[in-house]
Image (cartoon, rainbow, N blue to C red; front, side, top):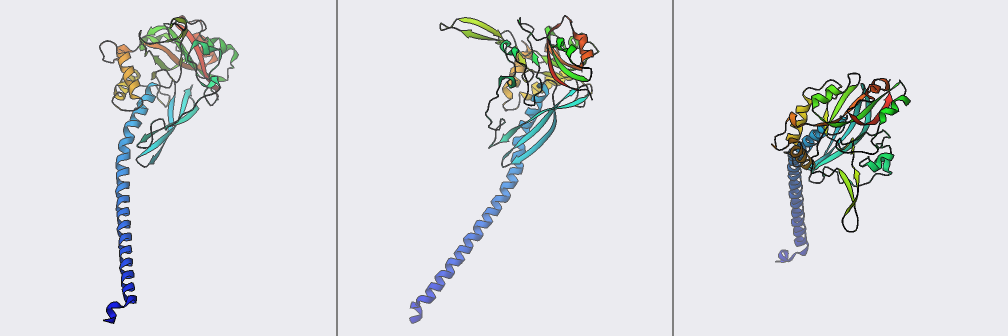
Amino acid sequence: MSELFDVGKMEQSINKAKRRSTWKTVLITVTVLTIGGIVGVFLNRTVTPLMEQPIADSFHLFNQISGANEFISTMEAFPGLFGGEHHYKTYKLIEGKVVYTGEDGYGYGLFRNEWLGRIGMRSPIIFGGAYSEDNLEYVQYNVLGQRQMTFFYPLLSYEHASNDLALLDEIGDDKVMEMALSFDQGYTSSEAMELIPKTVTKTWLWVNDVDEKDEIQAKSFNEDGEIIAKTNLLRNENTVFGFSILTPNGDKAEMPAENFIGSISSGTKYRTIWQDEFKRLNETISGEDGVLSVADLEIYGAVVTGTAESLATLKDLPFIKASSLGIVVDKY
């Protein structure tokens, strides 16, 4: 009977049971965590690429129709937990010379958006880009201090349209440069190519993406809501749409107009931050029939490259409404 009430043995038995229970709990926890981790890694590796693909495809399609005379040089992927980031660098080809123009990135997944959650501002105004005739008193630059090109609508009468072709006499023969040309009217892509002399390198064509309903003038109103002033708008090189005539290697591109159309059509299918712009472009450019074709493309301008001597052949040509100098670099 005394053994039944042996407190010491009872405590030993209880402690032993507690230890067994504790080890059992630890073992179950480790097992669950291990299995959960393995399943999580498997799901992450399976699901993340599915979230990555539409964003990456949409970005590359958008890049193909925007960024005047600019290409992507490198792309780095940083996958994470059910999402990730892509960082890229860009360059321009100016008479065969590769010019670095900056870097950027975008995100995807459950915990990142395409903008990577960024907010910010540019200061001073020379880094903001020219968007109206009022900004023309400033030369615009990117964050690397490189000149940015400006485009002018053919259907607006500008009081101070840029004529940077006049600057060529001040540029030495040891330099090569890019120049944005704004036309006096819309042309077909073949007409635009024929208009520009063979002495200069044609790199990129600006496609009209506005119609009569679009606001291309900024309006000022008085207290009664009446319009008291209008300011003509411009397009910065980062906001125009068009297509490159050259490949990223500098060779002549095959069917660039058709590829431009294909990029827009494909881009409308992806639910990304660029989808609305793809849809707007498709609707605006395609016209009344709603079917986008090469015949719908109206060329408003172009980007050309060359030396001061070769670009001087563009002076006084009647179809050039305005000219805007871009990046200038050493020839060698």
